[in-house]
Image (tube, rainbow, N blue to C red; front, side, top):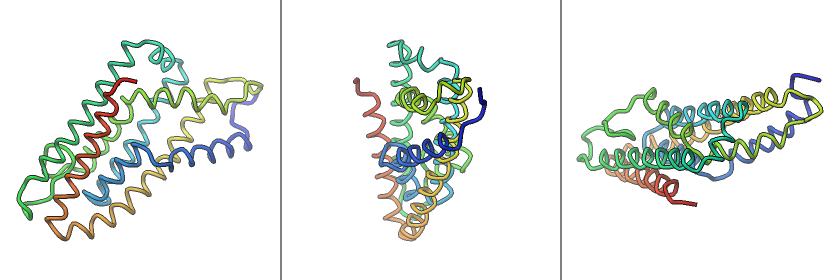
Length: 215
């Protein structure tokens, strides 16, 4: 029994993971909107947090804890509500920041005028780590690439999750970089920067309400 992923297994997984990560979805939308509203450092910091949040789901999937959470309606609902409320809170903070007079200083996503990259990174980490729908995705996606004949299924899942996290870090970082470059040019007009804050806030609130909706 081999402990490491085979090359064909790895290549197949990376191809599928890139398609999944690059496809339009909540994480991409959050990184994109935040990069446009707050610039490259903000977009890349938040995107890096979202990507590294996948490590939490990797550990849960490898240990089988994710399956227990998915099987427990109470635990799943608690995570769903917590994640949804957190997204709504971030969105409201961004919209509140946009209410300051133009030229009064850039606000960042959150309730403070200048969220440093570290705080945005932690917010991205939290947004991803407590999202129960990502737990279900990992439970459904990673095992498809496990080769039973190789043994060590939990170790294979752990490796697959790490690879997924690394490629997500690259994809989200690229989205944050390019969106941030556009956003930094747009923010030379303070009034437009306020509208970008509002749009980013609406995106977060919308995604939070979507997560709160049952089903």
